[in-house]
Image 1 (cartoon, rainbow, N blue to C red):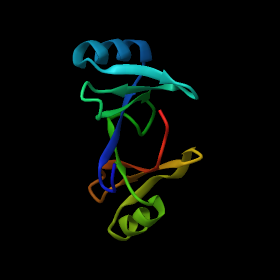
Image 2: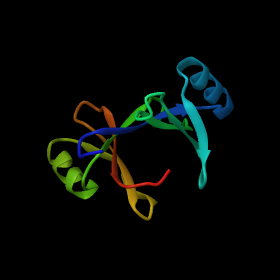
Image 3: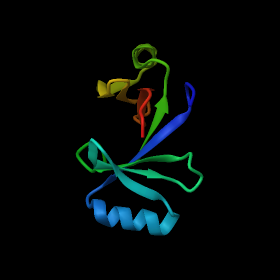
Image 4: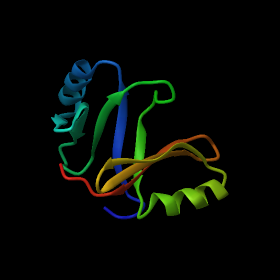
Amino acid sequence: MAHGDITHIDIPVTDFNRAKGFYSRLFGWEIADMPGFEDYPMWRAPNQISGGALAPREDGFTQPRSYVEVDSIDDTVAPARDAGATVLREKSQISPTSWWAVIADPDENVIGLYEGTTEA
């Protein structure tokens, strides 16, 4: 994927088993626990391109969140702040080669940022 592509969508859920059954039956999504991310079941759409994860619902995370791939989170957050965005989650490591962060745009739309590569 390239800078600016939507790369991942997290869906907040309260019951992983119920959500897995719901989304796999409704949309035909393949949903699997990935080693090291057992509390974060990953889903993939039938097109084998679209995907994301089922994530624990919590305060501040009650609606699906799209993640945009960026070349550099650091280089994206600075101009986002200058343009009126708020950083909701600072850059955090996912794996040795990948990171994420979360911002809210000036209208309070929440957007995840993803940098790096992961092996799945």
